Length: 92
Image (cartoon, rainbow, N blue to C red):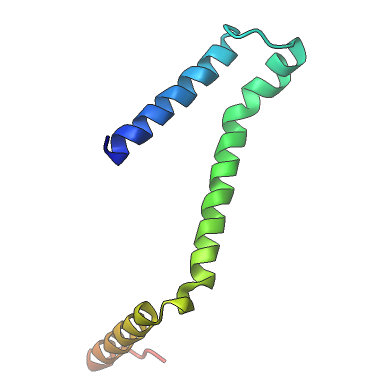
């Protein structure tokens, strides 16, 4: 199973579970059904965004832990600066 098929399968499973909760096919207490179930998609979106921000921050914090990538990026920055200076752009 490819990664795309796995992602689609999980998304269909989660969406069908939510739809069955939202349409009250799975019985829940009235408080849960009226107050919590409608907010589940918003909660999932906020949680996913927080997770992505954490991953981005962690990648930025550990970037210097990969010396090859750091050296390559610094070399590309130097090349870009020399190229821009050759074209008459003030870089610094």
